[in-house]
Amino acid sequence: MPLTLVHILIGISIGLSSGLFGIGGALVSTPLLKIFGGLSALLALGSPLPASIPSAISGSYAYYKHQLIDLRVAGWVLVSAIPANIVFSYSSRYVQGDVLMICTAAVMMYVAGTFVVRAWLLKEDVVHPMRTGVLPLLSVGLITGLFSGLLAIGGGIVMVPTFVRIIRMPLKNALATSLLCVAALALPGTIVHAALGHVDWTVSLILALSSIPFSIVGARLALRLRNEHLERIYGAFMLSFALYFLWTIVRS
Picture 1: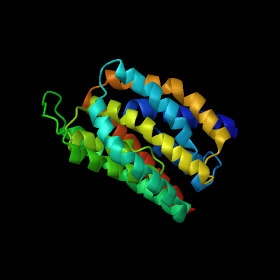
Picture 2: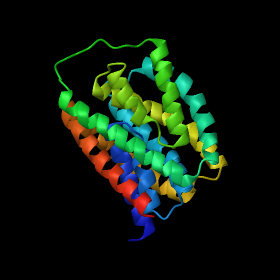
Picture 3: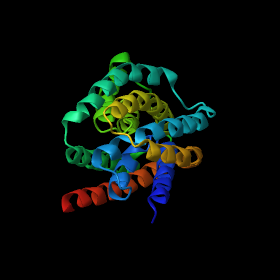
Picture 4: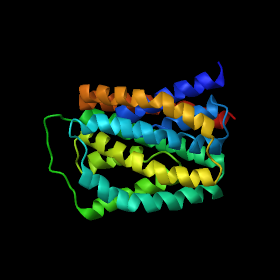
């Protein structure tokens, strides 16, 4: 299969995962670019970041029209997440690419497990008061900045579970708010990784153009699904993908 077509298909996966799961898509596209896209480990880490900006913005707009984005939560999370993202993006130059890939696979497996477990415990009719104190939001931002900078994964995989578990946001609000933060975090991450030479701009452009319409499709699909169904789909997909990705790393 020609690499350009492979990159288009990966861009579609970025868009769908961005809108459907509020994660920006870099977490999924990094291993795909490494395994099928012909990129080195560091280029596979950095190249999806520029593409995740327009796809996250377009997906956020679809959620915004349904008034699901919590701007206060997003603001406080970004206060600590953006500087942490810049610091740890720069720090990635001191870590071997294969090590970062193994870390990415491990994070994927952990997140997949949390979603699979939660999917069986969710009760749609139970509503808990949200915890919106500044300190928890800043803490979420620091952890998000660490992962999004070091692994170039957007931070949505950290924000969505913590928004739901710690802050007690409804899942779809968590997806929407996370996606807005992903768009903001991808910008400084892109600048730093581009300066380090970790971005293939031709691949990034292809990913961006193919991801934008599908991020809207993903967001609209998420709005139609029940929370527990959405989490089961996400958890099963991520766990299967993480195991396959880890297997390819060990085999090589």
